[in-house]
Image (cartoon, rainbow, N blue to C red):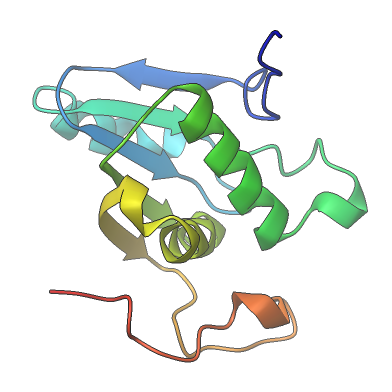
Length: 139
């Protein structure tokens, strides 16, 4: 049976460099170009992957952190990536955080920049996006 393409499969993404995998996730109004200076620094030592999150391609029901986390999981699974470093900005950070919480075995490091945190709640975050404890965080 042919493996079904995940939602991010047909989306634009950048993949440059060799080495341990670093995935960069943009925020709500971000795009692939926002990571150019970071890519330029990392690509000599890492394989840098920057998927375009399908924020404006989804139905209103699927435009959630939970669904974006699933699309990221499908993308990582499709490309058979393991021990990735996730760097997420703003909404991309929330997706990276939830992915790390759900699939810690696939993540080597998590870096958040201008992201909602573990103890933040707002009308814009989902109830299940709130994490009540720090048990899964390690030094």
